[in-house]
Image (tube, rainbow, N blue to C red; front, side, top):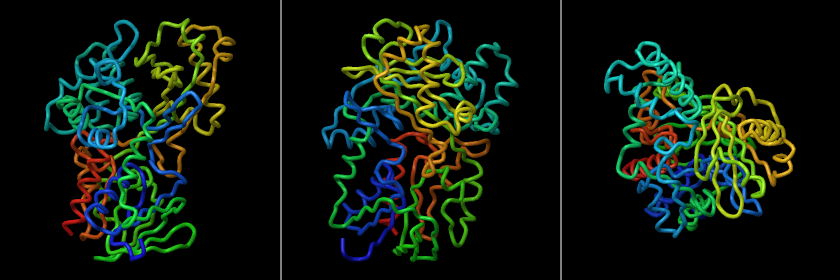
Length: 422
């Protein structure tokens, strides 16, 4: 692209790349600025010799057109996960039905009632203490949320979104989640779109129909419009300075939160894995034990990948550890969970990989949730300013699709329509 851009997109995650594809297909000149040295944002796949290991987004939640449209167009291979989404098929200790516990409590709240935190709901209803404890662990471990902050009305919306046609199905990408990123990027028109990596946007100066973006390296880029797709955590931290300030976004930014997550994926030899029975293929295990209260396993041939999930306070307990240290902590924890000989499990480790999304400077968290009074916060965050600044990303969705990749794609399709109308 030689002519000046008509639109600058900050961020080359799934949302930013989808917006670039939609706009360039419509004939708009686009410049994408990405802070990382890779594309995909919170999609992060490590390709080990034996197969892909996900360190970011892993599951395709639901058979929804936003994701499946790209899958079908690009001929990507999906592997359906054991009959449904985690909330329908979670493997767990006998009698511990965490998702049913959540459903039981949310069933005691009224749609459209005065909002309250999930902790407040738990404290006011007359339900068995074990059901309350299971639901609280689910909010912390699955939604990566603070029970005293997360909105009950937003949880009701999330549940309704899960119950849409196709919502009970779940998939993994056979060649890795980054195959989706590649497929979207390959369908961006290179004649009309330039994607630059290792460009950290630090300041945005804007007025109607003019945006100037400054970077950490001192470069400047200008265009009549810009789309901001950086994660909510980056916006809340003020990592990008806006002039004038985003006064219209202050309520949304205060009413939305970013969940903290660190995850570890352990690649184990089959000779070790065959001797255990507690974790089965495509199952989820909620132990409630720190620092990894949630475990799951994926078993694409030829080796199993076991993931330990540390969200909320459990992530904070791991803060400051190196990747190697988190792997060792997870391996020791898995030894207890499976009741296996520690030396044998350590010897069976073929590879250990980890990423702390809270410590990642270009994410500062894993995915968003709405605090009390913020069930419409995504819509507020996503509203354009003076047909000049536009906002996309999973956090800008208020219809229950936040915290998902298909939500990020839907937000990008929406913002592309808004830009083209402008």
